Length: 238
Image: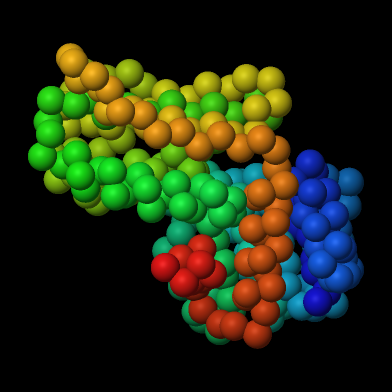
């Protein structure tokens, strides 16, 4: 399979290593040094694009891929206010869009565990729910896309919670998310249910970027020759 890498930073380089090891070919690499090379014509040389960039450029990158007629797999976060626009454009172009806030297989298992625990705790209002997410200092968005997905999983299963908030809060209707940016931390997410007598805590801690990169390549393989809006639930068949 021929792959276009839109975003060739640390994540893009990890994806490249895994893609090559799995027998794929990288036919286009886009980073800050050659943005002019991101054209429909160049994208048409690829079978699929993998996009890890920044929120301000992501939506335009997706549209170029739809216009080129190739699937795009994206892990960029912080752009979801434009999600309806992107989905509509994808459908209009009969395109393929695979998006995940986190491509780690372990994190996606963690998503399911989070929902299950939230459902079990729904009737126990004595527990305050809080979340801490820790990432490297280069991460631009806060809270992380993974933290938002986790918060949404809690909101879906605990009716008394109405929203998440990216700061400390004593409002029992809110889910507290604390964002920390430290060194080169690839990603840690901690969810705590805290009462006067005890607390429950579940944690996912990424050791490096390899899990994310591997999942992104699997998503690219899965997206090849498919149409429509795809997620990790489709890939994992859950």
